[in-house]
Image 1 (cartoon, one colour):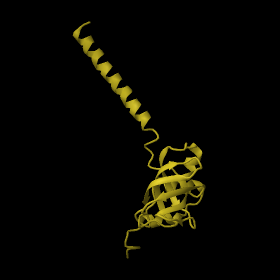
Image 2: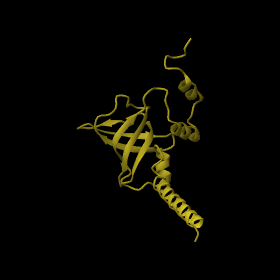
Image 3: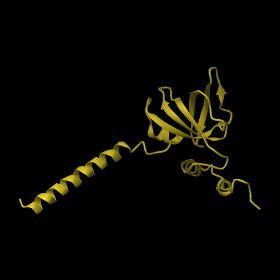
Image 4: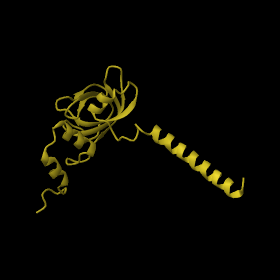
Amino acid sequence: MTRKQRRLVLIGSGLAVLAVAVALMLNAFRDSIVFFNSPSDVMEKHVGSGTRIRLGGLVKDGSIVRGSNLSVRFEVTDGNSELPVAYQGVLPDLFREGQGVVAEGALDAAGVFNADTILAKHDETYMPKEVADAWKKSGHWKDDYAQRAAMPVGGGGK
């Protein structure tokens, strides 16, 4: 083999190894890249018990039940499906019924999502794109949601 052929084989081998490494990384991160799953996504994907995921949606009205030792149970909905959530700890100040929430944790065998972290949305007009898309898909989207989200924080601004 000439020097030029050896150099080409070395470069080609390096690129092949790099391509395999990138493919393996992307395959490993395939399910982890999603910011959160809606309750409908969890039902459709048949997420196994013990699998850690992020669950996002709205806290269903009338579903919050507070227990002892800072335990709380509530349901997260996307308009189509609801998923019961159990959490023990201090809730964010913005957490309440009808508000957006993202919970991190895992499903148990009974189908209850055991959260170890609860994140509440930060203002009354913010809605993650995935939640808005899920609401549009389910037919629960109202056109004034987009208008309110585009408004400046101070109100109408005249």
